[in-house]
Length: 223
Image 1 (tube, rainbow, N blue to C red):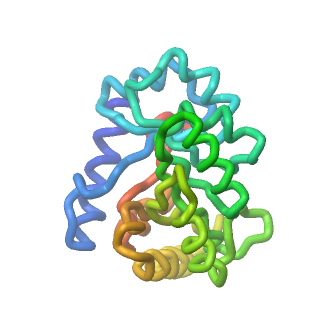
Image 2 (cartoon, rainbow, N blue to C red):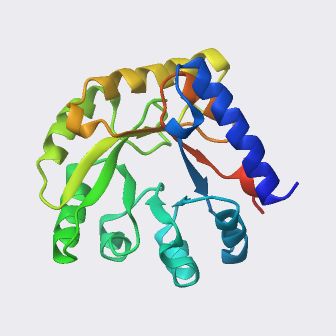
């Protein structure tokens, strides 16, 4: 099926999942994950209605940005090293993977220098897996409070990844925990709850997500 056909099917599924939680499909922001996807296929997705894309690696974003530019909003969804922040700030419209005050302060400093305010999400390690990035659940509120006061950035919510290979009950439990943490944030910091990928986005939406990150279901298996 074409990228446009895949997108139409995904939007139907997003709408159905949103209805379960008393919302509409338009309430859910779709981030098309473009890891390993070339600029030509990204443009096909944009022509089919994609308005926001997610990149995992700054070096790949730097290669694609000249071809795609501001036709979409750019989300940094992978781990961001502090020494790459200088390159990331001019490209990205939202950084979803902040997991330390040090990283937040570097983003704030570089954003102020670029005369912009960068929206950020705190990445939470909701699975508890040591291989995953993200702040621990017990430290979320403390980090959020600190990050919210950093000049040059705007704390706009939370992001998390469900445990890989887990059953539906465990996946939903991790999403529900992240939603509970998000609910405790001050109103001004509760814009986005980014959870759900190709394998679990419907469960994430039903548990309260308003932003999903989908790659394989749009572009096909990664090479």
